[in-house]
Length: 385
Image (tube, rainbow, N blue to C red; front, top):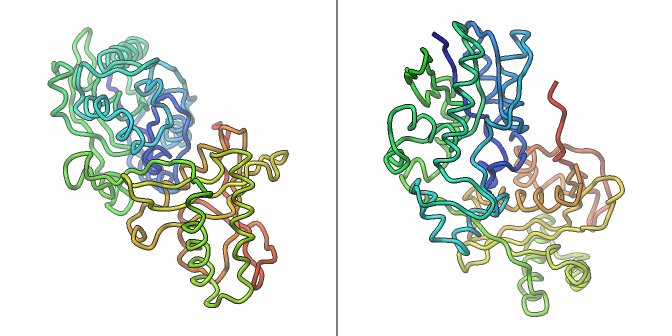
């Protein structure tokens, strides 16, 4: 008999930024690294003979919790990847809800009729992962193996091993990040000993415990944003009000407020590339503004964010991180490996937010009313040893 611990990757960008990540190669979040530490503690006294993972950064990095402390090599395979989301890859869930709502409803219902262009069906992904797990079991007779894969792929494959059709698997639960399932392989027989156990995660680092769709039941509970270019010819007054309010909040005065210069700079960037200044939208409501400088320091691999703003009525809801996801997606596609912005040292709310998101101080620059902290976040792909 071969025992296989089937483990979902730690919290990754798609989970946090609310974007569709299947084969997209996303990174682990700061909270995800805390989950990896908890997973390492769980497996400290569990004997493991071999470790496998998909060839995506988020699974390979999570697998370090097991293979590194035990001195084992990591074996990777694309057959252990997440479902391929095809034309949906790296698009915000809020945009898919707006532009492809019927197929998104099929996806959320785990319908056998769901499939998008250049992607896989649920049946295809579960046959792929099941075949890979059976092959791993045959290669490791009588051994204990840890396999790292992805949420949708694991959920559908566990349903297959439990004798459920794709349609029937809709009633199966969702696994938390780093949740552990245990399978026993004996010849052609597979037994699911337990599934989706996240008992090693305290509530404060559990991904599911912090997501409304899981707590309240149903994906509609999530507030997923979409993004559109800001029409500064028509919406310049909105932009200026946001800039003015941000200046007053940060500095406590309107002294030396640049006013029109802010708008002219934004319009210049927008004319060169409409994706440089975007509105974050909740349905038809404007929730925030993200301005990016797509040219500055491109030769250094840096993406600059001159303005990052949430409308007052959308603050305090944990939505601001989705703007960061849009910036990451935009600049990574341009080959940048760092994000950089300026933040007033006295803006404690913003400082805490950026620190939670993985930004760190790299210097100081002069601002309108004193020095500003220059902070940076790495968005490239580190090499997992």
